[in-house]
Image (tube, rainbow, N blue to C red; front, side, top):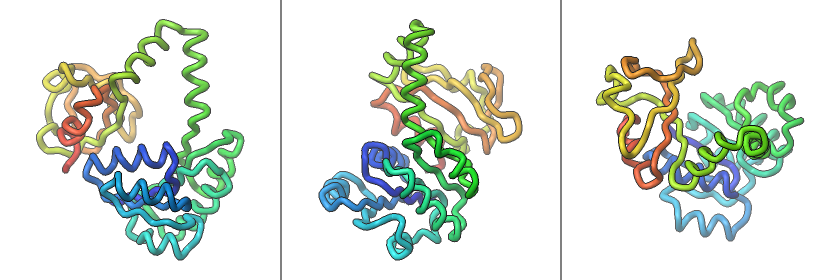
Length: 218
């Protein structure tokens, strides 16, 4: 899998780091020379210092070979323009970050179905703190020493296995299973994992890389 990420802020850098850990090919596009220099030292990935909404920069990143493009800057207009340009290269998926949730329809109109709003996510946590404090407390504690991650079921070692044979362990727990046709399923111990499923797991931070290898074909 080859992923091109535009934007070297906290979201873009963190995503790039996760993907590199999962052994995916990553190119990061960022305009700020200082951020580019730091990212090039920290990441085992190609870092291009340039404008991701410029065709030449996108082609320098071999956008025509990308499976996924992520527009992760903090500027909706830049993310929208880049998404429009990238559509011509037909990646399997375009993911865009939104700073203003009211702009979501603009992205949907150009065919970008996957949009992410950190602001809405933060608002969701605040809503839980106010209305469902017990649940929010569990979530916030989990974020301190663990991460909630989504992984594709690709590894032959887990395909055909029962959920109960894999989870829970001292390092992780499978929280949800996603099928293309049926949406989210609450996992039961007798459920069989199949290729094409995705799973959400709560994983201790020190074990993310090991768990990723367990489910992904890497």
